[in-house]
Structures are given as C-alpha cells and as structure tokens.
Image (cartoon, rainbow, N blue to C red; front, side, top):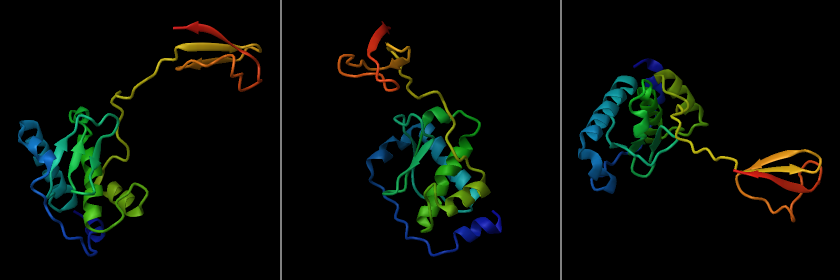
Length: 177
C-alpha cells in the first residue's frame, strides 16, 4: 500500500461494531459464500491494507449492478452473475472503497472526490460491466400519423384522444405484433 492510500485513512475513524445476529448471515455457510468472504478479505488486505470485518454475500436479486454496500450494518452484497468475470476483483475494490471510506468518516459516495481518488489508486472499476441482464421491451404497437410520422410503442395509445407529437395529426394503428 502506498503513502497516498494510507493518507486517505489518516483521519479519525468511526467506531466499528460487528453485528453477529443479522438475518443475511444465515446464508454464509455455503462454499461459494465462504470463498467470496475469503476473497473480499484478501483483496481488502492487499489493496487497502485494512481488514474487512463484516460479511460479504451473494445476492441473486441484483440484476444490473455489480455489488452494493449497506450503510446500516456494513455488509457487502455481490451479484453472482459477475463472480466468474475476470474483472470481479475490480468490482470488489469498488465496494470496498465505499466500505473503508464510510468507516473512516470520509466521502464514500460516487460523486465525492475521496471516493474517486481512492478508486483510481486501488484500480477498482468505476461502473459495473454489462452482463446482459437488463430487460428489453419489445415495441408491440406501430402507429403512423396522417403526415407520415412513425411511432413505436410498448403500450397502446387511444387514437381518438391523442395526436401526433410532431405535427398534431391523427394517429392510425399500423400493426400490432
């Protein structure tokens, strides 16, 4: 760990309490969860020079984000779809930046300068990579106005009540897929 990273933690840290009876800790016994916990602890010591004292768990409800840091009890959730990626350590470093800066009483949010500086120093990812989990809605309704402007919509439009937004012409349903 270089001197710049240690300077970020030189201010007065908050007192850390490790909670042992949280409901999410019941899932920690699986081999995948144990491996994740060890990996997060290892990355924390090697990149930040400070131990990770709380729990890290996989949360399958996460769809488009790589991980989440919980301010209330300091545990980390990770998207299991990201675990097999080569840049998963960068996602872990991103969440650990939130964790260590919050416990040190520094700016832990994405917009804070402390967060951006520390993230760059440790080599964490700024954004979660796309794993294709976003929902895509198909445009079922195809409308055409009397002046030739085309509109594709997911939900139907009442053509008697609404008109074209460009020219105020009447709308006609062309096709319904």
